[in-house]
Image (cartoon, rainbow, N blue to C red):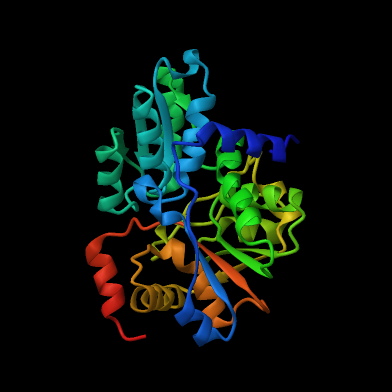
Length: 322
């Protein structure tokens, strides 16, 4: 099976330069003192549209032939790939349609529209919205830009790994949010190619963790998507997964899950200690450290992947007692 390699990621870095920022890597003094180890935060939520997804979406759009852009692009999204693809397409004057399920929060739907995309809200979960998306590909000849199982998307996400290798060669572990695996797979390829000695750990929510359950089963399997504070991590990896499952299986050191309560506690810690408003999916790495879910000695990096959370939801989380 074909896999994304380091040359693909290096080419992506050259291609998207000027469209994304080299996101800051900062030391969290408060968390470091609380946990008794150096904790660094990679601030991907500072990307335009509010998440790391702009990297993969931009690389995918810039890699398309004119004939592939002609009838517009389409995707299914659990919330963050959608606005990223909408913006990347709008920058090139290409029409985009983003299929979202009824589990996607309203603020993320509005984020798609504000970045120039047309929304199609239909289906009970991500899988059903993907079915709608594939029907549009068939009926309207639109070009599919899959949110994670796409080599250009994986390579774009992998540019984060190049930045980590450049900025923090001496860390002991790196914790990365895990959903379909595009982010984790891309970073894994980059770090292994750069001979990083850091343990790479994928972190996701307990319920509806498709990649984790698939890894346990030894093959891609479907799980039921449920409501979670880490809504951006919802959805299945696909039974016909081509680009992420094997890479995560072969290159990632461990994948763990955290509870919604642990994620919320991490969100509160990031807000009250660092003044950062991040969504649940972005806080899973911090949650894994705070809860002791991962056995990670020494310096750790947590990738904060996105900030797209409804204000009322965030206020509810931070007002709760930890």
